[in-house]
Image (cartoon, rainbow, N blue to C red; front, side, top):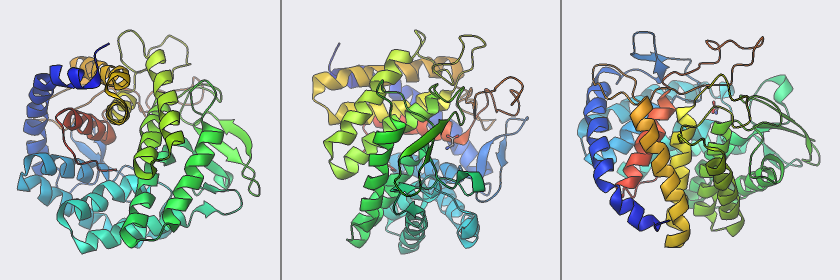
Length: 384
Ligand code: GLY
C-alpha cells in the first residue's frame, strides 16, 4: 500500500478532470435553481423542493459555498447568499426545528461567516447552535433528535454531523458550554451507537435519567442489528470531525474503527449498498453513503502518519472512482449529478421502493461528492 500522499499525487489529474465536469454542470444549475430550496430532483430531472424545515435544506447553498471558495465564481456566491435569505423562514418557525440544524445552517450560514465575515450569518448560525444545545437532555446526557412523541429519548447516529456547529459556536463566543454538550453527545455515541465490531446502530432509545441504552431501532436500515451504510458514513466523518475540533484521541480511534468496518464491508466493486447486513439480493445502492464516507476517510488519512493514512485514502478514491463511473451524470442540462442515492432500505410489506426513495438523486449526495473531490484537489476549506 502506498502512503496517502503518493496516492493523492497519483490521482490529482483525475480529480482535476472530474472537478471541471462538476463546475461546468453546477455553473448552469446555480443559475436555474438559485431561488429553490433543493432536496432532490423531480421525474423530469430538475430540482424539487420540500417543506422549509426539511433537514436537507442547507445543502444546495452549502454546495455553492464549496464551489465559490474553490473557483471564486461570483454566481455561486450569489446563490449561496440567496439560499441563506430564503432559509430565514425556517429560523422564524423555530418550533418546527429538530437536531439537524447543523446540516441546515452550519454549512450555509457558518460557511458564509467563515468565507465572507458576514455578521448576519454569524448570528443565524449562533441561533442554530442555541437551538441545538437546547435539545440536550441534562441527566441523560444526549441531544434529542426528533420531535415526535415516541422519539422523546431517541438519539440518531446522524447527529454526529451536527456537532461541529456546537464546536464552532464555542470557538466564536469564547465559552465552552456548547463544546461540552457536543462532547457529552459524542461520548454517548461512542458508548451506545458504536458496536464492538465497528458498525453503528442508527437509532438508540435511552433511559431519560441515566442515559443508559434501552433499545435500538433499525431506522433507515434493514433491521435493528444491521448496519445502514449512511449511518456508518455519518459516524466515519462525524467522529473524525469531533477529533478535528477537540483533539481527543478517542474520537480518532472511533472514526478508524468505523472506517475499517466500512472498508471491510464494501463489496469488491466499491459501490456501497444501503445496508451492509441486508440480503445480497436485491441489490440496493446508496451513493450518498459512499460520498460522505469518502470525505471522512480523506480527512482521516490526512490526520494519520503518511503510511497509516494510505488505506483510508485508497478506499476513498476507489469508492469515488467506482461511483463516478457508474452513478454520475455530468450533463449540464439536468439537475442530477450523483445518482443512485437511497433514502431508506425498502422493507417488503412495510415500505415500497418508491416510498423508500430507492436509486434517486439526493442533494447531499452531490454535496459530499463535490466536497470529496475538492479535498483531493487540496482545498483547505472544511465546511464542517
Ligand atoms: N439524516 C437522515 C438521513 O441520513 O437520511
